[in-house]
Image (cartoon, rainbow, N blue to C red; front, side):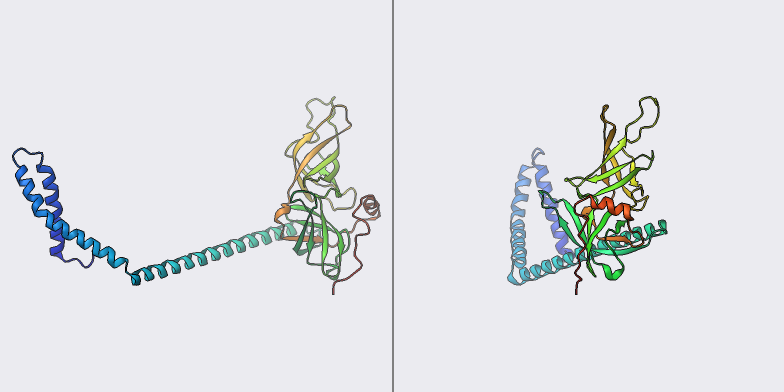
Amino acid sequence: MRGRRPDQQLLLVAIVFLGLASAVVRYVPGVEAVANATERALTPLQSGLSRGAKRIRATASRPGDAETLRARVEALTFENERLQNENLQVQDLKRENRQLRDELDFVHQRPDLDLMGASIAGHRVASEPGPILRSIKLDIGRADGLGPRMTVVNHRGLIGQITRLTDHWSDVMLITDPRSRVSGRIDRSGKTGMVFGLANGELIMRHIPQDQADQAGAAPNVQVGDIVETSGMSRRFPAQITIGQVIEVRQNDVAKWQEALIRPTVDFGALEVAMVLRDWVPDLQAEAEAAEEPGLVDEVEAETQP
């Protein structure tokens, strides 16, 4: 210890040495008497050391010292919580910066699209059991040049289509909604089909042509791992926007078509920002297709938000 004098240190060393010596000499013939004498000499010193240790413990347990320790612990706990909060804020800033950088890269990759950024202002979960997301709300609307049925995307792919809007807000139906359908194209093979939302929040691509049995060795029309993107054939959505990846193929030898389950590339449970294609408006044919789908017609609100 810092305050211990040199003579005290020597005394402790001597005590330890004598204690060890007394333990050893017990096993040396003819010196047991010396060992007993050593023990008798050490007993008062050991008692004194024991009393000193008790005094030290008593000093540490005094109310003033306990309060000091308690205050120190509280201060360290507060500092730890502050540093943890700052670390979380730094991680959030890094994530937002990475997300914005990804969005900017997507804008640079698609200079043919007039994209306008928006924040996700709200989410609507389906009434069915389970946390299945059906729509989102954007913080932009008519006043920002938006119109009904405009396409909504992010850097990962297709999100959905505007179904109703006011001057300052827009509701977007996601492609995972069972009412949604998108004309899709398998990037590897070029085969097309219709992508529908499912009640469990996944996607299924139907009406994919069956593989030709007479073309031995030919690559399949669809296989696990294929990337599916918008085909642009229906003119409801622009072409070459990623929809998802095939995770399962369903075939039937007697059916004309085959199906594929698709995992969306967009993480709908973590949406924070999105982009709207302002220069893409579905043509009349697309409007006719939309008229066959409940939920896409007569959903544009006439009111404007004050």
